[in-house]
Structure formats: structure tokens, C-alpha cells
Image (spheres, helix red, strand yellow):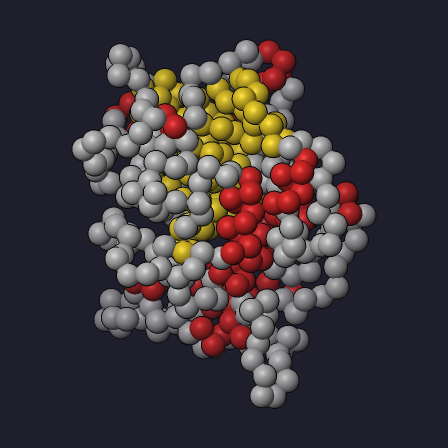
Length: 385
């Protein structure tokens, strides 16, 4: 998979009306139907002006969605105690994790099992989850990326922040490691595995252009479309607690972190390599996107589809009939990253709910604004029942 106002992403999902994995294993490399590819291309090419007027797009920021669209319904709520427990430190990075209200979980009547949870994660939780994914997660040599196929990754660069350098004889803490510690003008390069085929790349090329995904926990083999037999790295416990607390039906064991820039897409595909029917969790951070969902039951020859507009902090849970859906990302919308997230990984402006005060410098000012054009998507799944 590849990769103020808030960023948008469009993902096309086609659901097969089944609640359990088929007896015959679904093919991980099978191509979607032409009908689905047509929907994907529509939103890949759509202009922003046309998108804003597209009445087929379900946008939970528009008041008309809940007041006039009878196909959208609340199927459950996530209660305040569950939210407070899930948003525990270090995810929240605060001692006060009390949440005073509940969160509604929505479902479209034509798409059972596809749960949509707008504005699930508070701003502070989003900021700190992002840091754990792209500082600690990316700096862990056990977490493979798309870069590893063609380059040797110099992990020593993730420990070079002079403002956070430990005293002589001590080791850097897990919280201090990050490739964003490295100066963007650093001359140290990522050397290619095959120099005849690829040129070396710089830290700026790595972080701004080349990095597309990171794997956490189970390290999926994208070439063979399987999970390796050897014991995988442990899934990050704090991220696991967050996801499992909010979605207790599934055990977080593997994840892919997609890093998108405007113009990036995610081809239509199905997640069929897991030996588990438990749901898939998708959490959005940064730029917005469109999420196109299609469904065809075994008595209906025509695929039905809907399009969701997702923003930073939104979540989608693909379960039951939607577990083995086709899905893809035809469009990332630029200029929509929340203001309080745009400066990341430099010091962040606190959300208005926290007073709007800018935090003290964290030693990564040279990368200020990196997140303003990005969308990060955390996709979590259970590998085995």
C-alpha cells in the first residue's frame, strides 16, 4: 500500500456480503471488477470544486447527513469510561485522561459491519499517536518499510539529535529516537542494495518522498502476500491498548502505517492474508481523504457504493460482511491538515481546547511543517484467531 481545515482521503471499498472467511481462500492478487475501478477513477480525477458539491459523498461535518439521510444510523456508542481508559498515558501524554462524553458509531443501512466513527481521537491523542508511529516506530530496526527492499537503512541517524543526546556512557531513550532528529542537510545517505539499479538517497528524500509505509508487529511480506512463519516483533503495547480498548473484538497483532502525500493513491485490494475473521481498524491522521465503499450480495448483480469523507481523528472498523471488502485510496486532498498538527514534528501548537499555547522547542524545528501536506493512516489487524 502506498501512500486550519482538515485533510481528506478517498478510499474505495467493495464489500462482499459474508460474515465469515470463505471456505476457499480469497486470492490476495485478484483484480477488482471494472465497475469498481470506474468508481475509483472517478474520485481519483475529481476536482475539489466538484467534490465539494458531490451529493454522493457522505460528510459527517455537513449537518444534512444526519438530519436528511435516513440511510445513516447510530448502531452503538463508545462510552466515556471506555474512552477514558483507552486514552491513557503515554498515548495521551497527560495524567488527566477523563473524557466527559460518549462517541457515536455510525453505519450505512446498505453496508452492515462497516462502522464509521467520526472524530474518535482527541487532538492530544492524535498528536502523540503520530509521534509514536513516526518517531519510535520508524526508528525501530524490526519494523520494515518499503525502503528496505532497495536500501540499507542507517538507523544511527535516528539517534543524532544534539538537543536530546544522552550524557556520555548512557543510551538514548526510546522517546528520543527519531529520523527527524537528523538535520535535513545531513550528507549521510541511504546506500542502495544494488548500486547499479538505484542511487543513494538523502534523509530529506527518505522522509519527504520515498517513505510510503511502515509495518508494526507482524511483518507482512508484500512480495509473497503472506506473514512470515518466524515470531514477529511485539506489537507496540501502548498503541495496542488504545486500539483494543476502542475495538475489543479484535487483538492488535500487525499494522501498516501508510504515509500519503497529495497525488498518492492506494490501489483497490482486499486484506485476505490473515487467519482471522476479526475486524480491521483504520485510523486517520492529518490530511483528509475520501473513503468509497461498495457492496454486492450474492443475489444482487450490481455493486452498490457509498463515498465517505474522512478527517483527522476519524476511524473506520471493517467487520462482519465488510471484513473482506475491496478498498483503495484514489485521492488525498491537500491543504486540510488541522492547524494544531501542521507543525509536527517540530513543537506543536496546543489545540484550542488546551489553550492554543505553543509547546517548547523539541529540537526538530528544521522539519517544521512536514505534516502539513501528509496523511497518515494506521491500519491494524489480528493475524490469527
